[in-house]
Structures are given as C-alpha cells and as structure tokens.
Length: 143
Image (tube, rainbow, N blue to C red; front, side, top):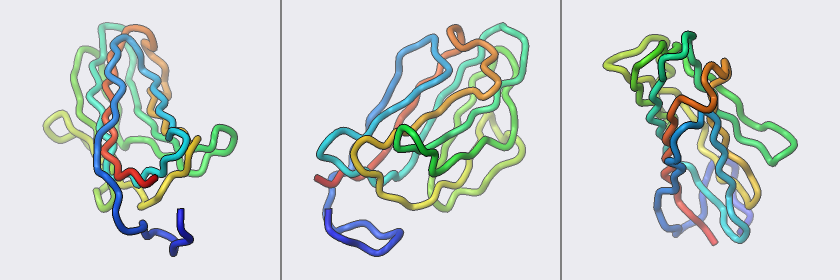
C-alpha cells in the first residue's frame, strides 16, 4: 500500500460487498483479510427485533483487535417486533429520530489495513441469540 495523504485512497481498487447474513445474532464482526485494504463506502444493517422486551441500540466500532479507533451509536432505539434499516456512510447525517423505519449516521473516510475489525452490535444485548441482524459492507478493495 503506497504512502497516501490522510483521508485519501490510492487509485484503482475494486468495489464489492461483503456480508454476514446468518440469523439469530445481534453481534457481528467482519475482518479485513490478509493482503487487502478496505476503503469503506457504506455499512448497511437490516435488524429484526423479536418479542423479547427492551429497546435495542446499534453501535459500530472499528478496531485493530485490541484498540478501538472509531465508535459510534445510532441516535435512536428500536423496540420489539420491528424491522429497521440502518446505514453508516461518509457524508450521511446522524439521525436522532427514526424516519420510515430507517436510521443513518456518518462514517469517516478511511482505508482499513489487514486484520482490522468492523463490529456492529446491539449495545443493550436484549436478545442476542434471537434477534436477526444482516450486515452488508460496501467497500473498495486494494491489494
């Protein structure tokens, strides 16, 4: 990976989507594979809350496995038996209220090196093995 100014990506790169769509889990982590660098374009989550009482609040962190470099929480909570769509992306507003079952939040422009971990989870851990979280990451890959 060439030495580039902060916030800028090198030329080239292939755009693609990685996902974790296994059901019954409210805590997901995706790791940048060896030999790749990811410029995150957007992180989308489809979250289905089951009947367990309590308000869910989604959080996003980016770490090297030891140190957390970015941490944010969505501005509103999700109650029981609802399906919300969440999106983190550069230049999106941090929504404090839900609009049409959707919430958005900003994400800094960054290129993640191999081994970095993107984690999305319900910080309240209301129904960690019952709720369904589908995570999609649009990223540009540099090798």
